[in-house]
Amino acid sequence: MNIQIKEQNGTYFAVLSGWLDTNESTLFMEDIKVLEDNVEKPIIIDCTDLEYICSLALRSLLKLKKESAAKGGSLILKNVKGEVMNIFNLTGLAKLFDFE
Image (cartoon, rainbow, N blue to C red; front, side, top):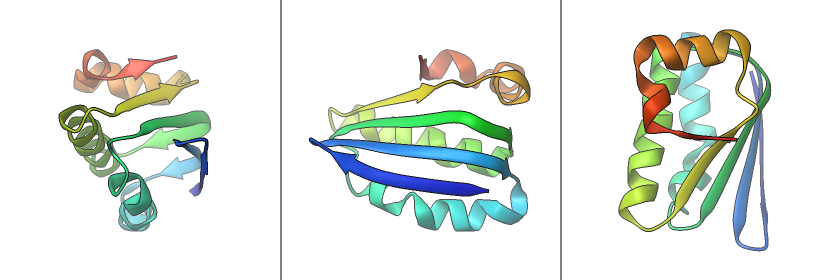
């Protein structure tokens, strides 16, 4: 799993790639700390090259989404496809997120 985060004009962009499995989820939670500290701002997460996401990472994204909504921010997941989108659909979480 690889994550790149940058801020541009008040919007935070994160690019996820590879397998975000249980072994990687602890690192993922540490890596997204900067997003958690800025939930009042727009956050866009690009999942173009994300091949898999585990339940722990889904929970982290859900927490980020809820905190963002509570503080007037926004969270958008972009380019979610294939197996990753299937996981969102199977867990019922697809209806809770904004996708582009």
